[in-house]
Image (cartoon, rainbow, N blue to C red; front, side, top):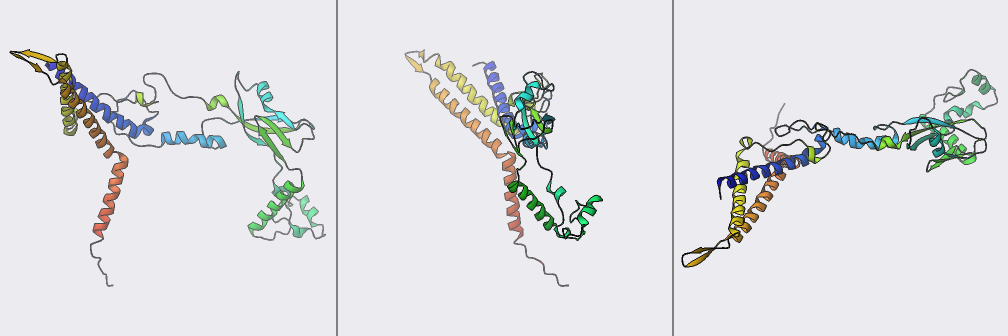
Length: 333
């Protein structure tokens, strides 16, 4: 073997070491790095954990109920037709000028409900035949709770009366309700007038599936392949890493020497032949490489954030147990 072979083995060892270290760092910090610029080198950068990606992932839940996210909710309306119960929202979609070619919608909310019970709330004590109800309604006081005599009642009283009104409307009357299946709207009760407005909110499905990102060289981090880690500089590697590199270089050199000797199974010598040990060298080198990689990965796992926090928690417990052996002072005041 020549010096260039040893240097090649050394260079591969350094590269393998960097690959293992930075692959571990990517696994450890990817949620904090996703979306950051790829133009910078993170080799010697301290990654501060942040909630950016977690918040971005959780926005989809708020997006579904209209309290967050990145998808816009739009408002529109349809005109009711007397004695028509079913309305095809896909037909509205096809005729809408606000939608582009190929756009489809998803209905999120339909505003088709009876007015709240509070606007029909009256204090039952006012119905005594005195005529006060009509009088105070004239002045706009009929919707106060409690309504007429302004007697202060517990709040649960008002809640029970409102619930009673709503149950009465739901059970004894044709309740305001609707069904929405595959963007087909069915309303209860059946509308009796033409030209009434039914408002609804919707989203464009094309906006929900929009993928943010950039294909440029300095675009955001989108996957583990473009996290900006480069090969490590050997002079900046500490003694722990250098020792691992020395051993891995030796294993690679053994492997190369084994393949070289494998080209010549035997070598003639005066009066006999010498059998070379290429199989032993290759087997030993393969076992050493595997053991070194497992040792490095185990070391990285032991220094992970999770393991370090567990170790610190155990240390705190042990310190507390040790301090509990110290006698407590008795203060006499």
